[in-house]
Image 1 (cartoon, rainbow, N blue to C red):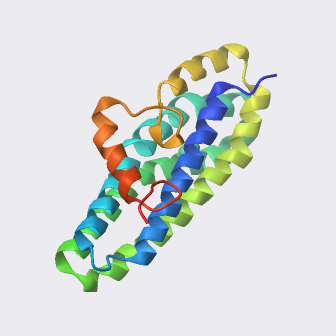
Image 2 (cartoon, rainbow, N blue to C red):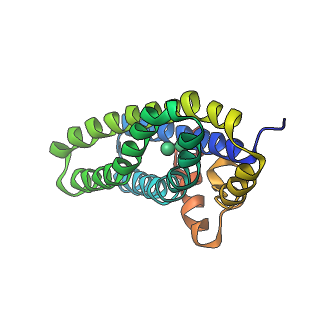
Image 3 (spheres, rainbow, N blue to C red):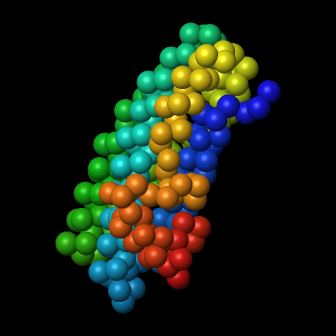
Length: 194
Ligand SMILES: [Fe+2]
Ligand SMILES: [Fe+2]
């Protein structure tokens, strides 16, 4: 059977987010150097993007559409799903916290740098573990258990995400400037900046 579109979209979005996190790590390790304005602007744009795309679109559809069907058909996934739901609830406050810590570093200076860097390290591990758990424990079970009708419903919803960071869709008008800026200023693998 052909791989359902939903699973392809989820994996593409995970890859895009991993790339974004990798690019953020690199940028943070490099630090503001002699271009602090550009450094902070780029980090702000990237964190804002994570808040807009994965947090609002990707997680919402996993929680609202995919997980309930998987748990119903494969109750052995209940513990993993409970943990993933807990992560989804934590994801948005966690990225907001990072945005706040970044502003503290930007406006209050070096003494607030370590708090941001440490929190980003925790956020990075949290997110990578989260995606791995989904890919190892949920997606293969979904592929085995869900019906053609389930996939038809899910495919329609997930196909609407169109995250431009996957490299497969042009950004919607309202995201175009933000997306261009990230691609221009962020380091690889997401952008072209240094
Ligand atoms: Fe998730
Ligand atoms: Fe996910």
